[in-house]
Image (tube, rainbow, N blue to C red; front, side, top):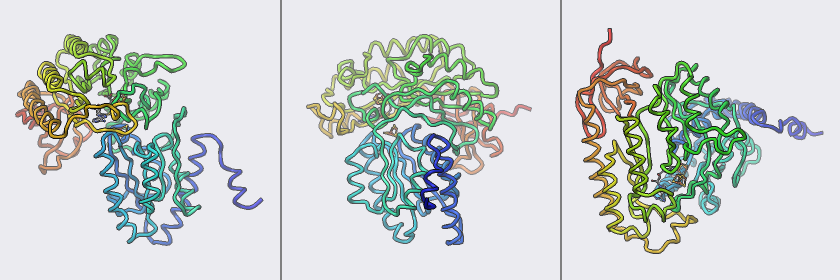
Length: 479
Ligand code: SAH
Ligand code: SF4
Ligand code: F3S
C-alpha cells in the first residue's frame, strides 16, 4: 500500500470524527505553509444575509481556527470566505463586486485561498458563472455541507484546482464541531434548518432545503454549555420556529421547547426568530405571557396588509387573521414590542393593496419594520407572474411606507422614555467615546456612558431621551 492509500484507509467514515481528522491534517498543512512564510496564516469571513448565516459563519470560523488559521481583520488575509445570501438580487450583486476586487488582492498574494459558500451557491447558474468568469475562486460549497470545510481545504491544497462541492439537500445535522462566537455573552442557537412554506416570492426553501428540527436534547445541552461559558442571552433560530418539532420522531411543540429552555439556570434572556403568523399558537402566547426570561419582543413578518396579495404570496393568513393575532398577543403580553418585514411591489400590487399595508402599519404600530422592495428571484412562482409593478411606482410606495413606519416607530419607542429598564450591555459605542451600547428586552438599542467592564452584564438604565429608533440613557447606580 502507498502512503496515500494508508491515509485514505484511516479516514473515519462517520461525522464528526471525519472532520476532526481533516482539521488535524489541515493544521499540518497550515503549519508547513506558515513556517515557509515566517508568519501565521490569517483567515477572514464576510457574512451576508440573515442570522442563520451569521451563526453558520461562527461554525466556519470555529473550524478555521481549529485548523490552525488565526483571525485576520480584512480581505487581505490568507483565507477569505464569503458566506453569501441570495434573498434579494442586490445581496447577489454585492458578492460579484467583492469577487472582482479580490482578483487584484490575490495577484499580490498568489497563495491566498478564496472560498464561497451560503445560499447563493445553491443556485446552479451562480456556480456556473463563477466557474467560468471567476477562476481565482478556490473552493465553492453550499448550505448543507458547511461542516465539511476542513475536508474541502485539504482537497484544495492536495489537488491544486478549484474544488466544488454542492449538495442538493440533506437529512444530516452534524453536531459537536467547534464554534467561535462573535459575542461571549450572547449566542444564536439553531433549532431547525430549512423551510417548507414556499412563499411565492421567496428563494429560501430552494437554497436551504426542507425543514429539519434538531433534537430538543441537543438544543438544551448546547444552551447549557453556552451558559456555562458565559452566555446570558440566546436567540433560537429557524425560518419558521413556530413549526419546530412537528417532524421529530417524538414530536414536541415550540412552546414546550421554550419552557424547557426557560428552566436552564443562569440563562437570563430568550429570543427567537422568525415566527410565521400562520403557525403562532395560543400555547406559545401563554408561554410568553408567563415567562420570566422570554424577551418582550416578537418579530412577526407581515409581508403585505392586503389579503388578496397575501393569498398570491402563499402566506396562508389574511389581514384580519393577522390583526386578530396581534390583539391576542397584546392582551397576553401588554408591553410587547412588535417588529416586522414588509415587501412593497409584489406582482399585481395595486394602490388599494398598498393602502391595506399602510392600514395594518397604522393599526399595529410596530417598534420597527424592515421594508423591502420586491426582488424577482428566478425559479420562484412569483417571478413568472404577470403585472410586475413598474419601478417608479414601487419606489414611490416604498418611500411613503418608510416614512409612515419611521414616524410611528418614533412615537411607539417613546412610550418608555423616562423609565428605568434592564439593559444587556453589548459593546462600546462606535460613535461616542466613553459610551456603551445595549438592548432592552423589547430589542430597542440604548446608548449610555459607562465602563467597558459592563459588557455582557444586564444593568438598569434610565431611558432619558427617545431618538427615533433608539434611546440616549444613563446608568442607574445600584450601590
Ligand atoms: N422566514 C422568514 C423570512 C426570511 S427572509 C419569514 O417567513 O418571515 C427575510 C425577509 O426577506 C422576508 O421576511 C421578506 O420580507 C424578505 N424577502 C424574501 N424574499 C424577498 C424577495 N423576493 N423580495 C423582497 N424581499 C424578500
Ligand atoms: Fe421564505 Fe416564507 Fe420560508 Fe420565510 S416562511 S423563509 S418568507 S418561504
Ligand atoms: Fe439570505 Fe439565505 Fe438567510 S438567502 S436571508 S442568507 S437563509
